[in-house]
Length: 181
Image 1 (cartoon, rainbow, N blue to C red):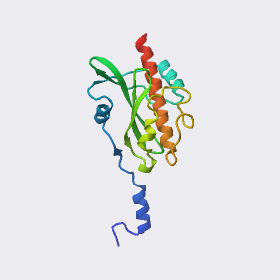
Image 2 (image 1 turned 135 degrees about the vertical axis):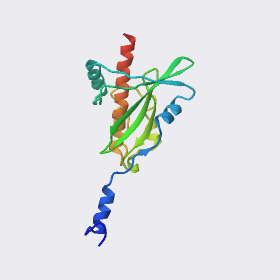
Image 3 (image 1 turned 135 degrees about the horizontal axis):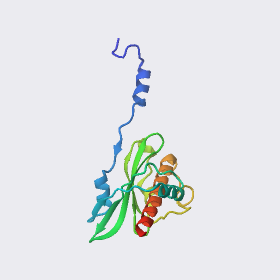
Image 4 (image 1 turned 30 degrees about the vertical axis):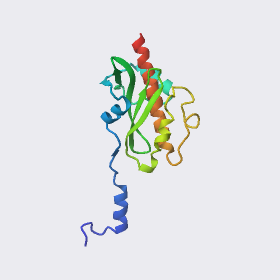
Protein backbone atom coordinates (compact mmCIF):
# COMPACT_ATOMS: atom_id res chain seq x y z
CA UNK A 1 0.00 0.00 0.00
CA UNK A 2 1.28 3.50 -0.82
CA UNK A 3 2.18 6.07 1.76
CA UNK A 4 -1.16 7.75 1.02
CA UNK A 5 -3.12 4.71 2.14
CA UNK A 6 -6.19 4.07 0.07
CA UNK A 7 -6.22 7.41 -1.78
CA UNK A 8 -6.84 6.94 -5.47
CA UNK A 9 -4.72 8.63 -8.10
CA UNK A 10 -7.71 10.78 -9.02
CA UNK A 11 -8.01 12.01 -5.43
CA UNK A 12 -4.29 12.79 -5.31
CA UNK A 13 -4.55 14.67 -8.58
CA UNK A 14 -7.45 16.75 -7.22
CA UNK A 15 -5.48 17.50 -4.06
CA UNK A 16 -2.52 18.64 -6.14
CA UNK A 17 -4.74 20.97 -8.15
CA UNK A 18 -6.26 22.39 -4.98
CA UNK A 19 -2.84 23.24 -3.51
CA UNK A 20 -2.22 26.98 -3.51
CA UNK A 21 -0.19 28.20 -6.44
CA UNK A 22 2.97 30.10 -5.70
CA UNK A 23 2.73 33.86 -6.18
CA UNK A 24 4.24 35.11 -9.40
CA UNK A 25 6.33 38.19 -8.78
CA UNK A 26 6.72 40.08 -12.02
CA UNK A 27 8.55 43.12 -10.62
CA UNK A 28 9.90 44.14 -7.23
CA UNK A 29 8.93 47.53 -5.81
CA UNK A 30 12.44 48.82 -6.48
CA UNK A 31 12.35 47.63 -10.10
CA UNK A 32 8.91 49.17 -10.69
CA UNK A 33 9.96 52.51 -9.18
CA UNK A 34 13.12 52.56 -11.30
CA UNK A 35 11.06 51.92 -14.46
CA UNK A 36 8.60 54.67 -13.57
CA UNK A 37 11.13 57.25 -12.40
CA UNK A 38 14.51 56.76 -14.12
CA UNK A 39 17.18 59.08 -12.75
CA UNK A 40 14.94 60.33 -9.95
CA UNK A 41 15.21 60.30 -6.20
CA UNK A 42 12.22 58.51 -4.71
CA UNK A 43 11.12 59.05 -1.12
CA UNK A 44 8.61 56.81 0.66
CA UNK A 45 6.13 58.67 2.79
CA UNK A 46 3.63 57.53 5.37
CA UNK A 47 0.20 59.12 5.51
CA UNK A 48 -2.59 58.67 8.05
CA UNK A 49 -5.76 60.14 6.52
CA UNK A 50 -8.48 61.25 8.90
CA UNK A 51 -11.82 59.43 8.96
CA UNK A 52 -13.31 62.33 7.03
CA UNK A 53 -10.58 62.16 4.38
CA UNK A 54 -11.01 58.41 4.04
CA UNK A 55 -14.77 58.79 3.63
CA UNK A 56 -14.32 61.51 1.03
CA UNK A 57 -11.78 59.41 -0.87
CA UNK A 58 -14.12 56.41 -0.73
CA UNK A 59 -16.94 58.50 -2.19
CA UNK A 60 -14.70 59.89 -4.93
CA UNK A 61 -13.37 56.45 -5.82
CA UNK A 62 -16.74 54.71 -5.60
CA UNK A 63 -14.98 51.76 -3.93
CA UNK A 64 -13.70 50.99 -0.44
CA UNK A 65 -10.23 52.00 0.69
CA UNK A 66 -8.61 49.23 2.69
CA UNK A 67 -6.76 50.35 5.76
CA UNK A 68 -5.94 53.78 7.08
CA UNK A 69 -2.18 53.96 6.41
CA UNK A 70 -0.85 54.73 2.94
CA UNK A 71 2.65 55.05 1.52
CA UNK A 72 3.04 57.48 -1.38
CA UNK A 73 6.41 57.27 -3.14
CA UNK A 74 7.24 60.80 -4.29
CA UNK A 75 9.76 61.09 -7.12
CA UNK A 76 11.93 64.17 -7.58
CA UNK A 77 14.29 65.12 -10.36
CA UNK A 78 16.59 68.08 -9.78
CA UNK A 79 14.61 68.82 -6.61
CA UNK A 80 11.23 69.06 -8.39
CA UNK A 81 8.39 66.59 -7.92
CA UNK A 82 7.73 64.65 -11.13
CA UNK A 83 5.16 62.11 -9.90
CA UNK A 84 3.91 59.91 -7.11
CA UNK A 85 3.59 56.13 -7.04
CA UNK A 86 1.24 54.06 -4.90
CA UNK A 87 1.18 50.30 -4.46
CA UNK A 88 -2.26 48.73 -4.22
CA UNK A 89 -2.67 45.12 -3.10
CA UNK A 90 -6.13 43.65 -3.59
CA UNK A 91 -8.01 40.42 -4.36
CA UNK A 92 -8.87 39.60 -7.93
CA UNK A 93 -11.02 36.49 -7.69
CA UNK A 94 -9.76 34.64 -4.62
CA UNK A 95 -6.05 35.50 -4.75
CA UNK A 96 -4.08 38.73 -4.51
CA UNK A 97 -2.61 41.07 -7.10
CA UNK A 98 -0.34 44.05 -6.45
CA UNK A 99 -0.17 46.95 -8.86
CA UNK A 100 1.77 50.18 -8.88
CA UNK A 101 -0.15 53.23 -10.04
CA UNK A 102 1.88 56.33 -10.88
CA UNK A 103 0.11 59.69 -10.77
CA UNK A 104 1.51 62.77 -12.53
CA UNK A 105 1.32 66.40 -11.43
CA UNK A 106 -2.05 66.88 -13.15
CA UNK A 107 -3.57 64.02 -11.11
CA UNK A 108 -3.65 61.71 -14.13
CA UNK A 109 -2.40 58.17 -14.43
CA UNK A 110 1.11 58.08 -15.80
CA UNK A 111 1.66 54.32 -15.52
CA UNK A 112 0.17 51.07 -14.19
CA UNK A 113 2.48 48.11 -13.55
CA UNK A 114 1.57 44.68 -12.21
CA UNK A 115 4.09 43.63 -9.56
CA UNK A 116 2.59 40.32 -8.48
CA UNK A 117 -0.30 38.21 -9.66
CA UNK A 118 -1.36 35.08 -7.79
CA UNK A 119 -4.32 34.08 -9.96
CA UNK A 120 -3.72 31.79 -12.96
CA UNK A 121 -1.71 33.58 -15.65
CA UNK A 122 -4.57 33.39 -18.17
CA UNK A 123 -6.51 35.88 -15.98
CA UNK A 124 -3.83 38.53 -16.49
CA UNK A 125 -4.62 41.03 -19.27
CA UNK A 126 -1.91 41.86 -21.80
CA UNK A 127 0.30 44.90 -21.30
CA UNK A 128 -1.59 46.98 -23.86
CA UNK A 129 -4.72 46.80 -21.72
CA UNK A 130 -2.88 48.52 -18.83
CA UNK A 131 -1.58 51.23 -21.18
CA UNK A 132 -5.10 52.56 -21.69
CA UNK A 133 -5.03 54.05 -18.17
CA UNK A 134 -2.26 56.48 -19.19
CA UNK A 135 -3.54 60.05 -19.13
CA UNK A 136 -6.83 59.16 -17.42
CA UNK A 137 -8.08 61.16 -14.46
CA UNK A 138 -10.67 60.36 -11.82
CA UNK A 139 -14.09 60.81 -13.42
CA UNK A 140 -17.22 58.79 -14.14
CA UNK A 141 -15.72 57.46 -17.39
CA UNK A 142 -12.87 55.73 -15.55
CA UNK A 143 -14.92 52.54 -15.27
CA UNK A 144 -15.37 49.22 -17.00
CA UNK A 145 -17.61 49.38 -20.03
CA UNK A 146 -17.12 53.14 -20.26
CA UNK A 147 -13.60 54.27 -21.15
CA UNK A 148 -12.13 50.99 -19.86
CA UNK A 149 -13.15 47.92 -21.88
CA UNK A 150 -13.46 44.61 -20.03
CA UNK A 151 -11.15 41.74 -20.93
CA UNK A 152 -12.70 38.48 -22.05
CA UNK A 153 -11.54 35.79 -19.63
CA UNK A 154 -10.08 38.36 -17.23
CA UNK A 155 -13.10 40.43 -16.26
CA UNK A 156 -12.42 40.16 -12.52
CA UNK A 157 -8.82 41.30 -13.00
CA UNK A 158 -10.00 44.22 -15.12
CA UNK A 159 -12.50 45.22 -12.44
CA UNK A 160 -9.98 44.87 -9.59
CA UNK A 161 -7.34 46.89 -11.45
CA UNK A 162 -9.78 49.64 -12.43
CA UNK A 163 -10.94 49.88 -8.82
CA UNK A 164 -7.29 50.09 -7.68
CA UNK A 165 -6.65 52.96 -10.08
CA UNK A 166 -9.78 54.76 -8.85
CA UNK A 167 -8.68 54.27 -5.19
CA UNK A 168 -5.23 55.67 -5.90
CA UNK A 169 -6.50 58.70 -7.81
CA UNK A 170 -9.06 59.50 -5.09
CA UNK A 171 -6.52 59.16 -2.29
CA UNK A 172 -3.98 61.23 -4.24
CA UNK A 173 -6.53 64.01 -4.72
CA UNK A 174 -7.37 64.06 -1.01
CA UNK A 175 -3.69 64.19 -0.07
CA UNK A 176 -2.99 67.03 -2.50
CA UNK A 177 -5.94 68.98 -1.06
CA UNK A 178 -4.42 68.45 2.40
CA UNK A 179 -1.06 69.83 1.19
CA UNK A 180 -2.71 72.96 -0.21
CA UNK A 181 -4.32 73.81 3.15
